[in-house]
Length: 135
Image 1 (cartoon, rainbow, N blue to C red):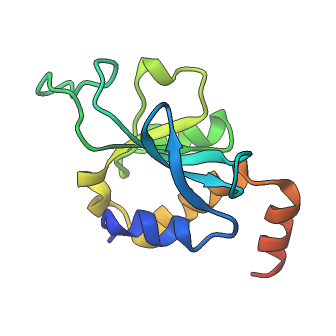
Image 2 (cartoon, rainbow, N blue to C red):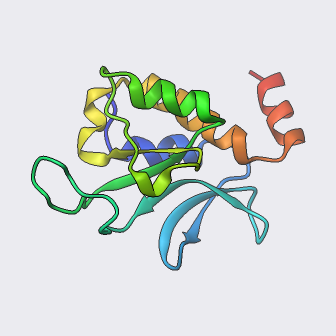
């Protein structure tokens, strides 16, 4: 099963990835390296737009993971067997949320597949083509 440390291992293992910041100061995995990098996995700060409906507390350990399109988002959010969800703040944005503390509810291979798709959605097309051609 997946663990929080798998996020760095998977992201860092992809071509042209760097850990930078976005949304001010939030740690974000970006592709490609450098000033044109686009985020595909971000550690989200607690915010009033993401509150646990059971406790009323702000989520403290959220990851934002980009998805390729609305269909991919719906598939993850609507699948009760995985811990991915969304909040109204992310309506119209192709990304899902997951608590780091719930990563153990999914297989590492499944998490890797989702992160590779996130990377591919943001990486330059030539880099994506090279990556998948080499697999």
